Image 1: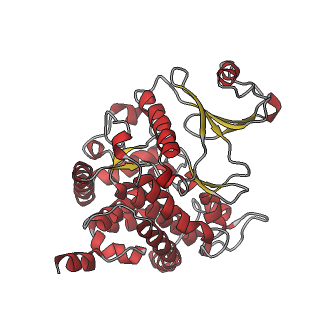
Image 2: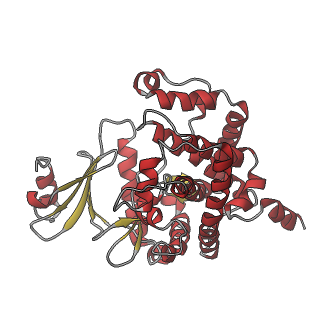
Length: 386
């Protein structure tokens, strides 16, 4: 396998040996990613960030800052599992992490465990504790970013940049057409970004910034690790927590498909069957509603466990926190819909239905929160007032 000619000099400078080509395996991702074992026996995950991108220096600085904070903040280090950053070269855009041996992502475990009472269950509290540990890091030592998080891009609710029209698929343009044609969703997203900005001004915390189940890894040692820290920044804790809740809502969408797959491929796991069938599955509105209600109820217990672990570990929140979490969870379903649209020729009715669930969470978070497994914010507000 061809290996980046600048990799070996980089590894050698940091005392990590040189790459053994026969061990190299390319990994998917927006960057150039490589798993490799070196001549000194180090198993590494090497990432090369495109230094030509406008925010490359900030993303690399974020990764370095997270590693430094994690190493020096002994108060959270024991509960903040990650893959240690062993070497970094900002000019080349190279980062070398200690590889997680036998890594399986929680996205994979979730697809195999739709009721969350099997191999996934022991890790659900760890998810809450991990995010609480991130949010407890010293925010004053988190490097500033030149701009806010990219999603949701509220300016695009008015008009898409020309570069999007040039490169976007027809399904992606259809999603944005519907978003732009829904003034209630547009207003809710603008309000969410304004409330997020206010929360950051009032009480900023260190946030991961781009939490998904595939960025939570479990190795042979059964330790849960949070990876991919390029969006690490000062922010609103509700963004991270809401994205995590949104991930479970997205998984419930795949559950809807799984409930109606009657002829699964031989040897395919539940998640694989769902993903394979989703584009072709035709369901009535009543079938979507019935399956969606059952799927949300199955996933609700996961959100409850996650929330309990997060708050018990000292997770950061304020009186309006649950409503922001719920709205971020609602946006997450639109975010995943856009991701699906980028890789398909048409969007299934099930994914549109999932976006409908996200819409309800955005427009009425107080009513949606209890159904998702979060505390009722109306009760919390009454208790605070009392």
